[in-house]
Image 1 (tube, rainbow, N blue to C red):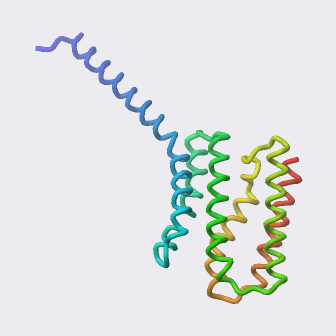
Image 2 (image 1 turned 120 degrees about the horizontal axis):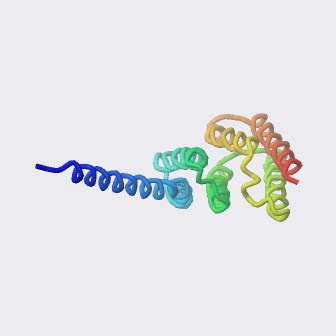
Length: 187
């Protein structure tokens, strides 16, 4: 027969093991947002060699991981400067790959190309000024920036199939205004 003392000792030992399990799980779970972001970087680079359906699947996965990594980091309370910088780098890689894919396929007038260049320039200057002023890349993760990213993510594939000159102009205007607002708020 097992004594009462032995039962208490066994229960205590099991509790300690359970606590250790949860601590280890929480530790590894805290890496998940950065793992998702790193996967987005790898998938973005792989998009350069993908065709048709595989490209669109990778495009969708990159968009989902972009939404998930930040929300997960906030939910797990594991936000960090490293994560913010990694996320900004992943956004840059994904945007560059998408520009490489989409822009040559668009048939736009000269003035729309000027609008796209102006929007990209204002966004780049805004990010550079915020980084140099010591705000870092995490200052760029604002509501305006998130909204702009979602609109561009949803809208870019449509540009390949529809005549959307006015919409492209409005998105460029949105990027310019929101980037200027981020810059003013950040300084």
